[in-house]
Amino acid sequence: MLFGRFTFGARYKWFKNWVNSEAGQRLGLALIPDGPVNLRMLRRTLALEMAYRPGGVLASKIHLKHIAVASTEGYASRPGGAQAELLTEVNKHESDRNLQLILEEFQNYQQGILPAGPGARSLTEVFASIDEKLDPAAATAPKTQRSDHDVLNLLTKRAKVLHLGPANYCWFTDPSRALCLKLAGTPTADRPLVGMCDSARCPQATHHPCHRPVWAEHVERTGTFLGQLDTTRKTERTRLQTDYDRALRVVAEIDAANTINEEPA
Ligand code: SF4
Figure 1: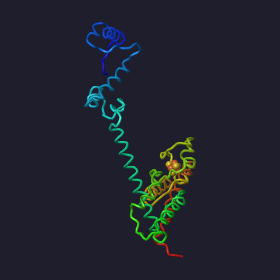
Figure 2 (figure 1 turned 135 degrees about the horizontal axis):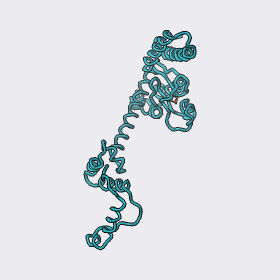
Figure 3 (figure 1 turned 60 degrees about the vertical axis):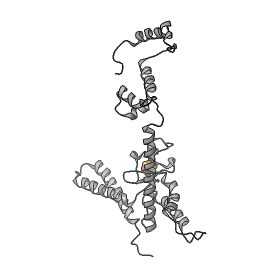
Figure 4 (figure 1 turned 90 degrees about the vertical axis):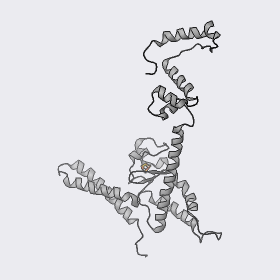
């Protein structure tokens, strides 16, 4: 506790009377206005006053016994503190990572490794339209060899709606189509609920070769459980069987979307 245990009300009254008295005024102290004051308000004002002095954030952190400087910054409403910087940095890393991921998937697409899953068609259409824009034959100007920079520019918009699921990519373009939000009863939220993702059924989900190991492991694990399950446990068996079939289907779809070694028709 910052101020220890004492009767604040009475002491504050004495203090205020003294500051506002002739003795206080002779010392040039500012008059204390009427109105309620409690220890919480005092702690907050003290934090603000201290934090805005040179080196004050650290002083406040020590004085208020905060574990992290970020808490003091939040407490003192200090703008431009480490929290804001950290958030900006995190957002920057996130968008760079998304751009890199979508570039990899676009390059996969160009080599014939297509996306799978319920959102595959929509993503393939996006890739096809970008590929068309990059096609040297379609370009009107003779400067044809496009750099990664051009590709990234075209992919940026799509990268902004990418969210990572544990076993899928989520292209959150339309909240009203998000299965997780429908299930949660919050169809207008501005972010997907990845923790409630059902990527095998949501039209905004895609599966890629990088997700295959997760699904393959799931197939193996559920297969083992199924094999060990007592035949009397029908409900459990049905649930596991559905889970197993779904994972098996996702793996098969990811494999089928790899058209690299397909013979041309
Ligand atoms: S269910 Fe999954 S893929 Fe669909 S919007 Fe939610 S998080 Fe994204």
